[in-house]
Length: 305
Image 1 (tube, rainbow, N blue to C red):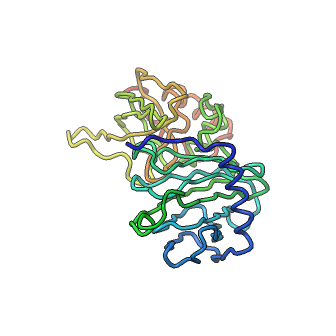
Image 2: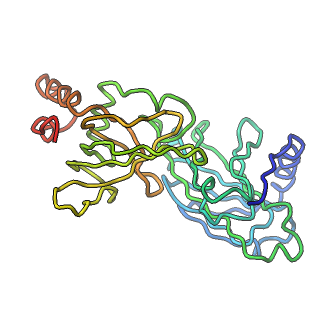
Image 3: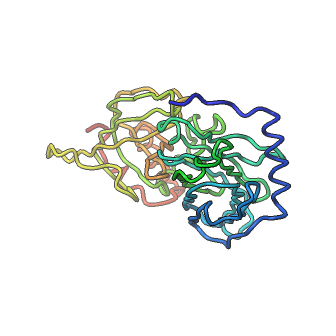
């Protein structure tokens, strides 16, 4: 694997200067969810910057034969509201560096030459005044014959309004236990909700994630097929759920109510109380009229299966 080199302060300053110089010669693309382009069809000046606008909650970008730079502006629809966002590079990502515009500076978040495993790590950020921008610059070493070797800058992005627990990895709040209101919200609105045991926990220092292997005795909801039958005829389902490594998740005994969201095709852990404790909360909320949705499936379930 090619050794990585961190961007120096001088390089960052040069990039900012390059961006503002190129701004006068930028080209614009209309609002869309996905964008595909080629550096071979761009202006030949290596300092040219093309503007790309995204106003969708998710989408993709594919830039073949990267040359010059792209400035990607992200907004959550036309609401103007602030959001959390994440981008993920494809394992074959090559030929450019990706920077986050932050307080009039550029912060390197994806570097050309990273390992395939590291490329799949989520890079997350928060908007400012309902907008954020990424700056994608073709790698400086691509010149002459190197510039026509096929390289592809492939990214996926997802945006989420800051109305509930987010899926990024920018602070420790996501590691704390959910309160009662968050538990009920998670049960009623998460992408997946299962009653499951934790079979194992695998930690990956490269991706900074822990992967939970789950055996679910009951699948209450899943928007995408994350949990599949294990084929042993006992009605149990098997699935993998990811969470930040820094949260220090460990294997626990007994049944849990596992909730979470699905991003970039992978399940990410949300709230995960012990099933018997959530059952008590569901019974109390229903009895006092504070339940946010029908919770009979939980109230009728056995504490341990």
